[in-house]
Length: 51
Ligand SMILES: [Zn+2]
Image 1 (cartoon, rainbow, N blue to C red):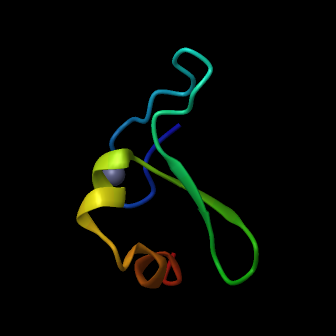
Image 2: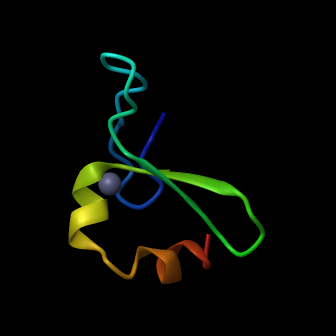
């Protein structure tokens, strides 16, 4: 799985936790982003609308 913002690989599951975060866009579609982008882009929702 890849981060949908930076394209870096996001570890799928490590110790039963996803190394990243899922956020939903307006259509309710899930997007995976890494924890790094999650911290660096508080406005990530706006970016994901453009995907
Ligand atoms: Zn990322």
